[in-house]
Image (cartoon, rainbow, N blue to C red):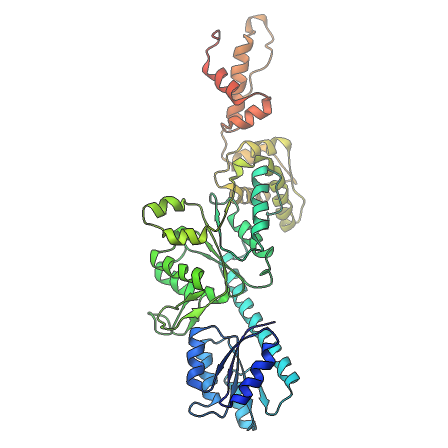
Length: 456
């Protein structure tokens, strides 16, 4: 793998030798002849690995090692010296050096050490990002991206697949619970960054001062309780994906800082005068209308333009009703696996699911299925239990098509109107579902309900 390597040696010949050798590997290289110059470089760009000579004028290599680690604790440092001794080697390792090489060393040995150090750096950043992801999600993730056949969902998935390999910001919009997190996860998994960290942050869960620290990190003493330096999620997501959910809740001051990250990859931790850099891809999501917020100066126009390079609209569950049985079966199989028995729903129970409005979208569907799995006494979930969990009113009996006595016979138009009314109540008022089920048009339903019996 490649990385940004800082070469620190007061001998120009050695710097040229290492620059030539490591440049062939495609690494980004910076040089410094002394510790002060090295520190200035490390404060302004993100360094993955520093190769540091011990004997230098002014600050020696061991002092520089400690200072570099204070700037970025996850930076790897390899000590190179022509004056090797046991004491300096032990001191270097105690200070956090990755390795210690004595001059003259074989260049092949250096190549191996550089590769191992950069791999350790990559794994460290990835583990930090995964830890952040686990801390935020608490095991609530589910992958329903591949489930669905409705045109609206397939269109959203197709755009997700096209956008995934493009190293551009993405804005995901849709109602709460509709699956914006699922789309964001798919964008990461289907991208070249899939092997790196996926770091989510819900911008609506933290207070403004804590949110900025979480996102950009902070320096020790920046505020009460900041007892140590802390890396932000921008750093953890370097080379990976930073998913900012509920982006509309991001304070205006933080919006300006995020805009700088998108424009240049630069940000400044809270309480720090030093710029850091990140190569994270930013994906943002919201259930709110950002155009309206921008029009009232509650969201920055320039940030909206920068985020909205690719826009994916996630459909509400009521707009993809043909996917409800597929999603329900998937969620039932997951719930059944957890409780140790196979679960299924009767056709009547599934019909109630199909007619329900699902204001909480897929998230509500998942929660309802989990509740049904716990409450059901058998492997087959009945309509009565579904109605109870969904708090549906008892259904009126449909009017019989034919009454038994001649005196009870009603005009056909009355029977038609009463049956349509019953069907609408049965489906939670979903006119489209009733029209589809009865094989008539929506306008026909409106006309029947509007007209009085006996009128044209």
